[in-house]
Image 1 (spheres, rainbow, N blue to C red):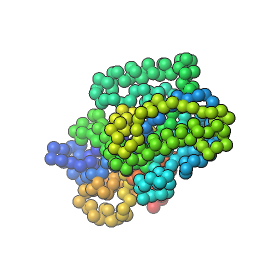
Image 2 (tube, rainbow, N blue to C red):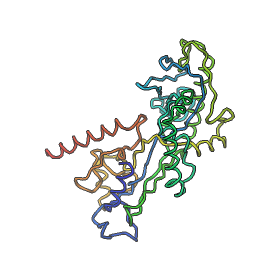
Image 3 (cartoon, helix red, strand yellow):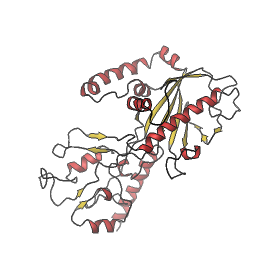
Image 4 (cartoon, rainbow, N blue to C red):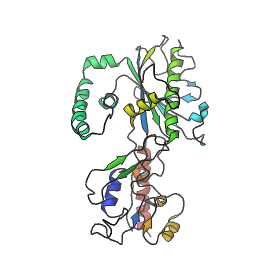
Length: 346
């Protein structure tokens, strides 16, 4: 919905109209012009920290370290949300919402994870994205199923550093003359300096987590990765032991360009208006033009100026949730159903 909803609304003639497509057959003049369609795109992004380690990691022992608290998933995975302010790093004025998420997984990666790690999006060239990358993805998928590869990968551990409180904003657009054509998606990752600093400090925190595990011999120590009574060792493969996490480091910039990837939580491209009520917005925009500050839908998910049209997907979020977005999408769907029933009873 985050990508296709803007396409549908623009194809319906609700986007901004310029001199070339004003009052065309596809864009009747009676339809409103909504500038916010496709704006405010947000997503969680990920940087990997890949380790080679011995095979005696016990995922059942967890404590806290310097404000870092991790919990175990039902699968072989550990995760935790961290507000970097609590670790002494002032990123935002909000001390309640998490800034980054650390996701710790063992080496038995799924083919999709291997594909993201081994096949970062080096280039946007059509030949690479449409020909070479799909072929390489098939090869990686096949290799990941080999017993030898699974045995070797059991000595690997991935710590994914996720920016879950992004301030950066991107956009989704499509040519109004060809709404069925390709979408132009600009995720806008790390365009805000606060997000760059969050990812850098998140990577630094992950390294500190690993160092604390190296210094421990028993599962009762103040660490977050439990070790079954044996000394735990590791060697950093990505980004590597010579990689520095200093501020404004060109190495960090290069690493993000090569390996930064999506958490697949895109949202916000048809955001809800949150600053004023619907009546005020409709009064101020009786000429049918809605600015970017007005959003696309009101608090009852109705598209501005179009009776009976609602949007109920991840695109309506004015701000992305700090957790995976599936629960928020379910809540949006439930609210939309309730709104429809209430309006039908009036």
